[in-house]
Image 1 (cartoon, one colour):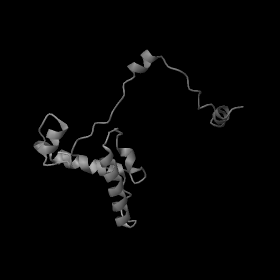
Image 2 (cartoon, helix red, strand yellow):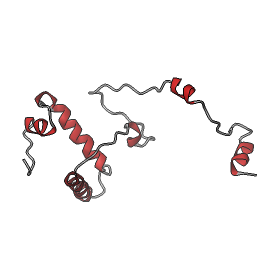
Image 3 (tube, helix red, strand yellow):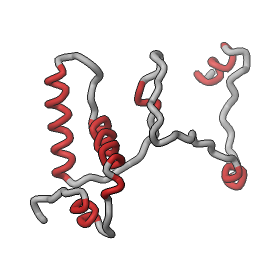
Image 4 (cartoon, helix red, strand yellow):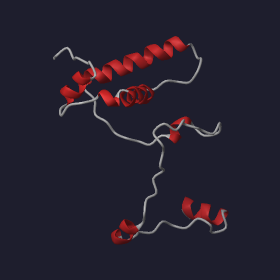
Length: 126
C-alpha cells in the first residue's frame, strides 16, 4: 500500500488522488491576485513569516550588482549583532525599490542609462 493510500485512509478518505485537468478548463479558472495600495503599510501576523506577505518577481542583475548586494547584506547582518530581523538580498532590493518609488517623479528617459542619469546615478563605465 502506498503512502498516499495510507494517508487517505488515516484521514478518512478526505485526501483524494490528484487527477489531470483539461488545459481549456485550466485557462478558464480565474486567478485572484491581491490588490495592494502602493502606500499601504505592510501588516503581517506574528505567526506568519514576513516573506509570505510579498509576491515573487524575478529580476536580472549585473555581476557587480550581485556582488555588491551580497557583500552589503553580509556587512549589515554582521553589524546588527543578532538584533532586529535577518536581512536578505531581497530586503535590500525592496528598500532600493522604495527609494526608486519616492524618486519616481524625477525619473525620465527612454533607456536604462538615461533613467539612471535622471536620478543622478553614474556608473564607472559612463
